[in-house]
Image (cartoon, rainbow, N blue to C red; front, side):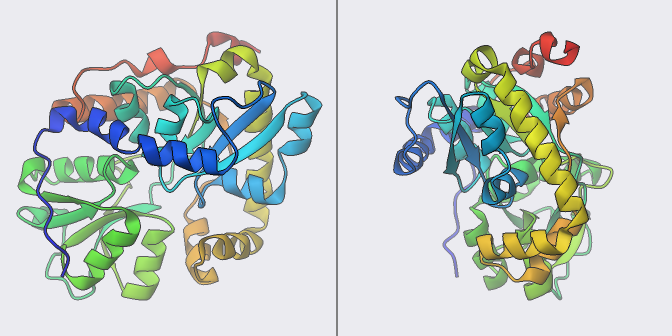
Length: 331
């Protein structure tokens, strides 16, 4: 059985602690891939997570020709999750990357300087709160007094917040067990936790290999978008690079929508998962990328306000302070 972890003692320091705890790992990951803050000025360093559209773009080589035409070279840096990627952005170790909806809120509250660049469509069915097969828990209302595993500061953190509120379950009545996905799965299957807030492809894998049952997904609760962020350096020095990345991602998404079986094979090999697991995850993923507008900024402000009310961030933030300059929408 997994050792019980104590609850968060001081939620008001949550964002600062999150950023500090991943700094060394993030910078080490970047340095190991040949990217550093001393990289030549003509290099654009892009952070990716394995299951994202950015990684598919990397694997298929669809961005490099466009960037070369701008006189820029691409360096790719992999990260296990959004918080680590954001700390690397803060350390100027990368210039562009993608995360879920919650990590940017925690990062902005902790003083990380970034710009909201683009987003992908809502994926309301691509994350969920699940319980083991045969669990006596039948709804989110049953989670009071129970232990829920989740990755701290990730997109599913906001899912849990909103799902509990919708079910009139006090947030503090649920014990949050903060674990990365691999450890969460071990705790989930070993019975150390009662439920798991999880996203694809880990969600799909839990369904197909462990018989996980869904208490709630994001439908009617959260948008669950993949959000692309840029450094201010990139916005100010090479705005054309951001447009090139967004255009390439959009083309990659159009190809992916027409070739889901091929995408499933590529990503299954990349993540070490069965093809049928990736196919289920891909079927729930929306493809396509656009520059971020008012609707998505409003969604992000809702996340920020909810986290402030619960004491998960230490101060109020205005997400529009991280919005793209108006010149982007005007062109």
